[in-house]
Length: 450
View 1 (spheres, one colour):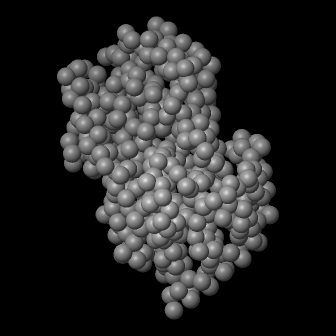
View 2 (cartoon, rainbow, N blue to C red):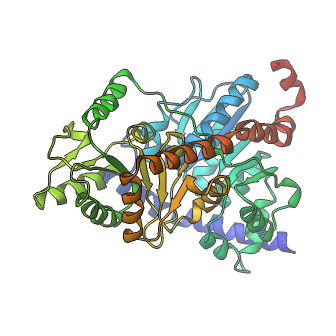
View 3 (cartoon, rainbow, N blue to C red):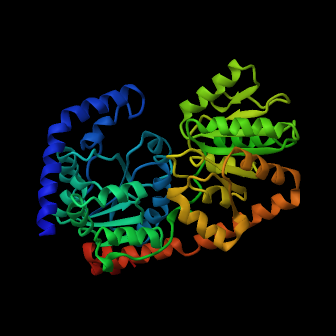
C-alpha cells in the first residue's frame, strides 16, 4: 500500500516537473544573466551533454557544491586505481564548484553540470550517459533522479548521507513518507555521517541492511593542486604578514561580517597591528564588504585586485575561489563562519584543523555538529564553539595573548583531524566496492583489473 502511494506521489511530482519546466527554463536563463550559471555550459543543466559518451561501463558521481565535490575526489581516485575499466563522470550543481573542481579532477574524468530535477532533463541526461551506477553525496534526494534511474536499472549509493532537521521534518509529514520511503528503497548503500543521521534515514523507512558506517569524507579532503603562480601569490601574502598577528574568518555569509568586524575592532585595542582576514562564502560579497569599509575610510586590501597589506592595513578581504585550504596555512587562528546567525548550519572545520589552525566556530552548526562533536571528544581543545561576538572576542584575546595556549589549541586540532581521517577512504571504498560495484559491474571485471 505504501509503495503504491509512493508511486502515485511520484507521478504527481513528475507531472508537476513537466508543467513547471518552462518557468524553470526562464529561471535558469535569469541565473545565467546574473552570473550564477556558466555562460556557455548552462544547457547541461537541461540534461544536454557537451561531451561524447565514451564506450564501456560508466560510473556517475554527483555532488552539489564545492565542499561535497572535494570530498568526492579521493573516492574517485580510489576508483581509478582499483577499477581502471570504468569511465567516470562527475557532476556538480554550483558554478563556484565548477570553477575549482574542474582543475583538480584526475585526468580522464568527464565533468558536466548536473541536470535539473525535471523529467525531461533527467531523461535526456540518462539516455545519453547510460550510467550503471550513480554515487550521490550527502543530501541529494531528488525524485526524478532517483526513481528515474531506478526505472533504468541503475544501481545507486548515497555517501556522507545527511538530512537536516528541516528536511527531516518536511519528509516526515505523513503524506510525503510513502514517496521518501520509495526513494530510499532504491539505494543499495547509504553511508550516514553519524548515528543521528542513520536514525533519521531509518525513521524515513530506509531498509536497515543498506545502512553502514565509514566516517565523514570531509575529514579526508586532499590538498588541491596549485599552479606556480598561485603558490607565489600565497607565499607573497605570507611574507607580507610575517611580522603581524593574524586571524582569519572563513566561509562568511551575509550578515556575519558585522559580527567579525565588531570583534576586529574590539581586538585592535590590545593588538593594534592585528590583521583580520575575511574570506566570504561568495566573492561578490567580499567586494561589497571592502566597498563599505572604504566608504567608512578604513584601510582594507582586496585580494582580487592584487592589493598589498601595508603597515596601515588591518583588514584583508579574500574575494577569490579555491584558495581557502592554502590560506589556512598562513594563519594560526581560523574562525569558521556560516555559524553565527540563525538559519545557518556551519561549514567544514577539518580543513582548518588539518592546516594546524586553532579552530573556532559559532553556535549554529547543524550540518557539522557531528564533526565538531567527534573532534571535541578526541580533544576538547581541538574546536572552540563560541556563542556570540563577545564570547568570540574573549576566546580570540586568550589565543592572541598567550603563545603557549595558542600552540596547544593548534596541535589539538591537527591531531584530532589526523586521527579521525585515518581509514575513512579505505572504509568508504570497501563498502562501495562490496555493496555496489561488484553487483553492478561484476566480480570478473574486478579480478581482471588486479
